Amino acid sequence: MKHRRPRHRRRVIARAVGTAGTLAIALGAGMTPAMAATKTAAKPTATGFSPDQPDQDDAPWAPQHDQAPQQHKAVRPEAATPRAGTSALQLSLPAPTGRHGVGTFSLHLVDKSRTDPYVPGNKPRELMVSFWYPAASTRGHYAAPWMPSVSGAHFLASQGLTPQQVTLPKTAGHVLAPVDTKLGKLPVLLYSSGLHSDRARGTVLAEDLASRGYLVVTVDHTHDANEVEFPGGRLEVNTMPAGAHSSDTLNVRAADIHFVINQLAAIDKGANPDVDHARLPTGLSHAVDMSRIGMFGASLGGGAVDTAMQLDHRIRAGADLDGQFFGSAPRKNLDRPFMLFSSGTHNRNNDGSWRTLWSHLKGYRVDIQLHGAAHVSFIDDEALAPQEASLLRLTPAQLQQVYGTIDPNRAIEIQRVYLAAFFDQELRHRHGTLLDGPDKKYPEISFVR
Image (cartoon, rainbow, N blue to C red; front, side):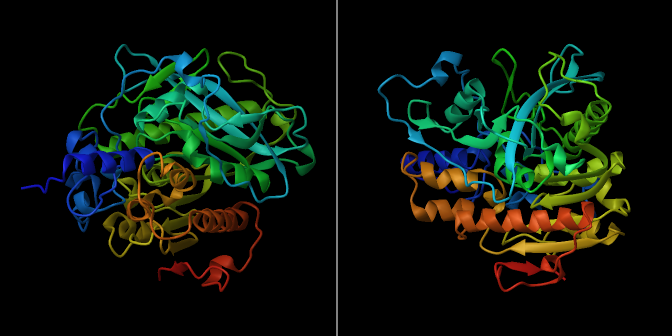
C-alpha cells in the first residue's frame, strides 16, 4: 500500500514537481502525486535495456521522473501580459561567462519527409529551434525572452502560477544581432532537453557556450515538449500517447536532430530553411562549420545523444547530462568522443545503460560526477526554482530534495566550465588539464574510473 501524505502536503510537493519544470522527482518514500496520476512514459522493457539494467522505477534519473502532470487548460494569449500596476516576481538567469556578446533567433522548420508520430492526420513533422551565437554587436537588438508569451504563460500554469505573479527572465541573447564573422566558421552544438521539457530549459548552458564562440542550436521536440509556440502565437502541447516507449521517443528525437543538421547544411550553402521566410542574422551563412558538430542534452535529451550519433555521423562528439540510455544504440560501438556527466547519486556503477555504453565507447571517453547535484540540476530550473520558492511555499529542505545540496550558481558554473572544456578539446583541439583528473578549483567533481 502506498503511503498517503496529508492533502495539504501533497499540494506542496506537487508544486515542487512543477517548479522542477514538471520533472517528477521522488521526494522521500514512494512516488510523487504527478507520477501516480499519469504514466506517460512506460516502464522500459527488457528490449530497451542491457541485461544488467536495474529496476528503473526507483532511479531518480529515469525518464518517468521527467514526466509532466496532467494537462492544464489552455491559457489565452492575452493572459500572458501582466496587468498594469501589478508587481510580478522578476526571475533572472546567471550571465554568460565568455568574452563575446550573444545573438539569438528562432526558426520554424518543417520536415516534409516525415509525418509527426504524435498527432493524427499524417501531418509533416514540424519543429521550432533557437540559435545562439557570438555577436559582432548587440547594440539596437533587444534581449530575447526566455520563452515567448503564450508558451511562457502555459509553462507558468503548469506550476500553478500566472504572468501576473511571475515574469519569466530575459536571456543574454539579442535578437538577430549580427554574427561575429571575425571568428570565422563556428563549431556547432545541438541541444536536446528532458522528456516533456522545452528548449528554453537549456538556455544557461547554450548562451554561455555561444559567448565562448560556439553556434548552439536548441531544439524543441514538438508534442513531446509540454509547450512549443509557433509563429502567430499557435501553441502545441504534449500529445505523446500513454505507454510510449523511451526507445521510440529517442528515435524520434534523433531523427529531429538529423533533420536540423540538414537545415544547417542548407544555411551553410546560403539558403534560408525557415518555412515562413523569417529574417536571418547578418553573417550566418558564413558561420556554420559543418565539419565540427557536437551534441549535448539533459536527462532524456542526454540519452538521445548516443542515438543521434549512431544515426548521424556528422556529430563528432557528444555529452550526456545525467540521462539514461535506451534501445539498441548503447550496445553499438561508437568511435567518437563522449562525455558522461552525472548528478551526485548517478553514475555507471548504478545505471546498467551507462555501463553498457561505456563498454562500447571506442574513442575518447570521460565519466565525471557532480557531487551535491540532483537530476534537475542540469537545466535552467536550477537557477529559477530558488527564486520562486516563496511563491510556491517551498522550504529550503524541500528545494534540496529536488535540486540537491550544491549552491545553484556553483552548479551552473561547474557545468559550464566542464562542458566547454570537453567540446573545446574535441571540436577545437584546445587541450587543457581539466579533463585529465581532479582539480583543486572544482572539488565537487570526481572522475568515475
